[in-house]
Length: 425
Image 1 (cartoon, rainbow, N blue to C red):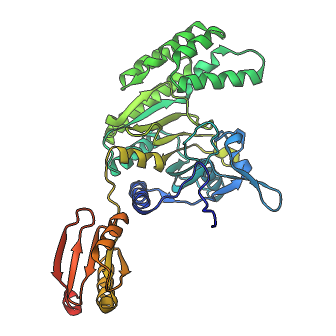
Image 2: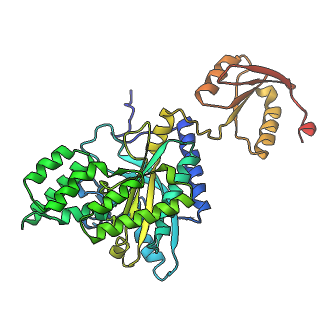
Image 3: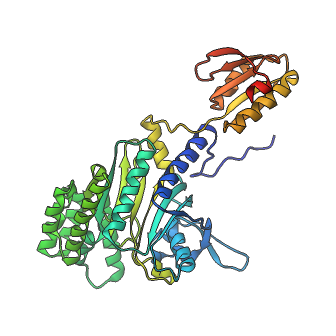
């Protein structure tokens, strides 16, 4: 017997109701992005390795899926769509002076090694606003995230908003010594400790480093710099340098605009955020909700990323991780209500009526699947199939004039007389 093939670790098949739900979510979220004036773009699933190289700040080299083409060029499956959009925008819109609004949906691939059970292939849906460095652009992106999550049915979610210059200012106040390699390792460890909110471990590490007194005080209040707009005043007092203070002022101005969008209720400030990608340069944000251990949205400003591809222009963007969002919606028992198909079950003798019915329903936008049965097969077998397939309804044709309408979920059956063709028209 031939052995059945399964999917590799970290990827899976998505089908039936789950797949319908995912596509419905994509459609709902894309509608919100289009309402804000964003235009669709599709970039390749794999690119030249240089698009995601270490200096770009996307994903570590060890976590990239790399391979070669026939000419020996190194290629990589995209771990993150933003660098691909940046590369495309720098080329396709090289001479454009006005802001460019782009949105996308696609799969990303990260070869995780230490996260058992974590998916290596995820679907991201996001938006990029290229060519505009302003609080208006920042607020627009956050408001769009809030509107998108609400559109999916989520009511309880939180958008954490921070600024990379705050943590960067703290790091600049530490004397790491002359060894650059050791310095990079220590900075990475500090960021990891902050991201994990392991402030006891952070204190222990700082004890072994040469840290200015004002910087040490700022580190000590980091756990408290999370909350509503009131924490920004305290953050301003603790800010280590001018750039950090300007970052806090920008957050205050963004919040003022978010109130105009009526999105402020979902915003929390977190000055301990460090950003998940190295290319972030200004505000950073993540959205969280119940039912998933990871962020459902990641975003931030990346004013120097397009420079890597030949166009110097500021930019900001975000990505919604659809797989995480679906998990949260499922655990919160929030129904997405995808468009479901209906079954028409018929025999040789009712084939003409079945096809006529199907054509009539399809003209009205109803999804119809035709299923032919043997005359001696009973309804129960097809009820079970309709329920497994997640069908909204089953029309079981018993003869040329009678149809039994079945609700697969409840088992309720209603017998009706079938209308003639001219009556249906």
